[in-house]
Amino acid sequence: AQSVTQLDSQVPVFEEAPVELRCNYSSSVSVYLFWYVQYPNQGLQLLLKYLSGSTLVESINGFEAEFNKSQTSFHLRKPSVHISDTAEYFCAVSEEAAGNKLTFGGGTRVLVKP
Amino acid sequence: DAGVTQSPTHLIKTRGQQVTLRCSPISGHKSVSWYQQVLGQGPQFIFQYYEKEERGRGNFPDRFSARQFPNYSSELNVNALLLGDSALYLCASSLQGAYYEQYFGPGTRLTVT
Image (cartoon, rainbow over all chains, first blue to last red; front, side, top):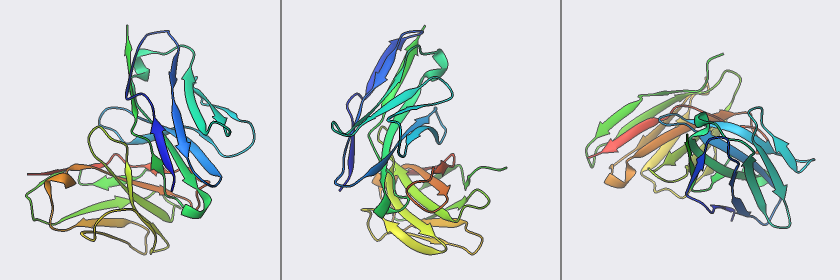
């Protein structure tokens, strides 16, 4: 069965500093990988996804994530954060045989301080 | 285009009662999934429906049930509510297949007292 572990439950970071959110997954088959962001009192929004091809994927707002198959990881990074990046971030995986089922990690709360 | 809509936004129920939550998918999406997000945790998969048929079920008791209508909207029903059912219930719609992005609604906040 697939599982997702986000190693940090909270990450405080100063504005304009870099941030890395760690995500490791466990699965016996090929997976698709996603990062979702959840702002307070809102639903989830897709930040970026890895389906195949280049192991480095980027979002339009400066985030990037790298798929590492040997380490079963999909860490999220941003070189310089803004106050508006304060949110909760969820890593998720899906498997072809499991249809549209997403398995989520426990989330990492990012608090950007001025 | 409208996104995924859910109703109601908030709901307060008493233990033992029953609740029905509703979801309307994005136009053209035939797959609807339901997730439960307990405070401080990641969402947990409850059900997926595609073309009005159940395609996946998570590890939830039989008190949880769902259905999908011909217009692809969906309802989630929870019977005999427990305090532990208090959570944000998220609906997501997508095209069918693990490859596709799921679009989430704003959720229904259920409080059981």
